[in-house]
Image (cartoon, rainbow, N blue to C red; front, side, top):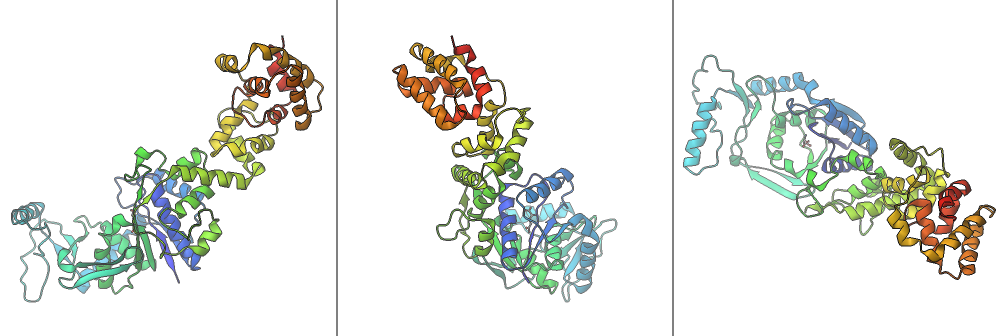
Length: 463
Ligand code: GLU
């Protein structure tokens, strides 16, 4: 049974890198009919906040990455970690260490002077025949793990291939602090063990933790999971993705007018591929997803591609399905979509031209509020010779059948009668009716605006 997990630390929003890790872990579990577990790693109490927990849950819900178990919270599992520490002390795979901060500093200074890598020297580590000093009075000890001293620890990383490190390179790391609280690397091990995790899929910033975690798992007699370390994501400019690149929080994409389907499809291709396929559904992704086609090199963010996908998914959703989204976005700006043209029709007319929901809302706002076209824009597009044609057209609008072909015929007839080229009338019409010089086909825009509003907006230009 495949069991994967996503184990974010709630110290900020759910960012794009975390969301991709979550997506891959989720998809792997779904692909194999397994289970996906959500675990909140909140032991860094100084940096963890309830708001960040909520932001993670919101982000996961928005992306519709549902977990089968959890969320587990590490802070609620302290007793269990302490229990395992006691078991390890009893089994001799961990030991109390009374070395003071001053002693550690002195040790480090000596090692640096000898140009050695600073590391704990195992002075409190029990060994056959070794006589340990008496524990100093009044010192609360930390607990250290008895890391194997020889051989190598390695694993076949499902993304990066074989990784090995000599045990001699690893020192006996602290698994419980002097106040008894377990350390991060230790909690992860106990959790992955207790939760029966079979594949650990996570960011490659954790590669250095893996050998230590494997050694502890082995000391516990636990099954070691497989590991897949995902390479980092670079921004559009090739540097590590960070706040500087703008929207790195998943929920910011919602704010900015992206559909979750587009973000999922985009993230799926960020470091993973299935031939040349760029557009695929969530179901298709789950069927195709594997860890063999994850690239070990860094993936680069490409905003243009995300926009392209977003437009695809907006069109695929269709005008009617986008109505609630656009209505909500306009309402948040205080725009009442109850007054004005049918929103689905308006969306349908502009859908091809906008690649985010926000741009669509921007374009459609003019149909639901009073507009005041910029005088310069009007001056630029309304020539003296066009004025009588405009007045004529307005008169014609009073009785024309309100449908696109009839309005198109009226426009044509008017320009012919006045000996004008089409744009001479079409351009000022666009500006007067929408405040914008770029619109879809002018006859369709007139039709959308509606007779009353069109006449009201044209009224000041009829004399
Ligand atoms: N809590 C860790 C993080 O947010 C992830 C740990 C793991 O996946 O093992 O980076």
